[in-house]
Length: 282
Ligand SMILES: [Zn+2]
Image (cartoon, rainbow, N blue to C red; front, side, top):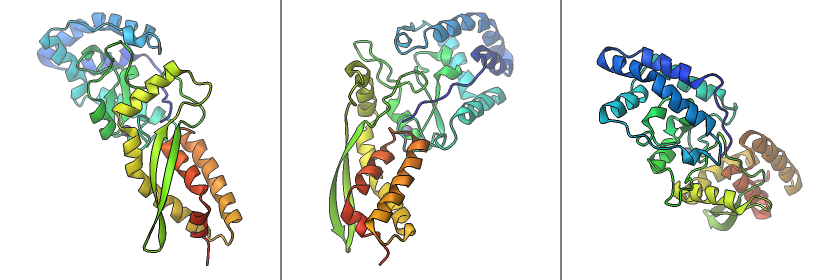
C-alpha cells in the first residue's frame, strides 16, 4: 500500500484526444457530448477530496450514451494508451511495479475507483484510473459505497495513510527437513494517533480485498527471499547478520514505504534469533 501520484495536465484534454480518434456515428455522438462531459469533469475535479468524493451523483445515461462512454476506455485508442503509460510512469520508481491496493502483485490493469458501470462519464478521467493487479481489480469489481454512504476502498491518490505500521504478525515456527519454516498470520492494528473513522476505511479495504489472507499466502515466498539474502551475507555471528538485515530493512522501507506487508514480515522474522542462527556461515 502506498500513495499514488496523479498525472499532471488537464483531464479533459485526454478525453478530447480519445474522442477525436473515434469514427462514424459513435464519433459524432461523443463529439456532441464533449461540452456536457466537461461539466461532469469539473464536478469530479472540484469534489475530488476524501470528504466529498462519495457525494458525486450518479447520472441517468441512456444505454447508447453509456455504451459510447464505456467504449472510450474499452477501445485501443492511441491517446488512451498514452494516458495509461503516463499514469504508470508518473509513479515512484521502485514501487511502480507493485499494486497500490495490495502491495503484492504487478499493476497490469487499471481499476476505475468510481466504478465505470455507475460512472461511465469518468471511464477515461485519469483521477479515476488506478493502476492495480488483476486480483484486486477482480475483488473490487463494482463495489463503491456502503449502505451508509461510506466508501469501501482507499483512494491512494487522496486518502491519508498512517505513517507507522498497521500490521502485526504472529509467527509459528515449524521444522521441516531440518530447516525452520515460519507460518505467519497477519492482523490489522490501528496506530495510535490515527483516527478510528479514517481507520474504518482501511479496515473495509482490507476486508473486501481479503488482504490478510493474501499476505499469509504470499508470506512463504517472501520468507525464502529474505533467507536467501541472509545466507548470501555469510555472516559468522547473529549480531553481524542482524545489523546487515537492519540496513537491508531500512532500504526496503525507503522503497516500499512503512505500510507494505513485506516490511512487517521482515521485521518479525528478523526478531527470531534461531532463524538467524540457521543462516550463519558454518
Ligand atoms: Zn493488488
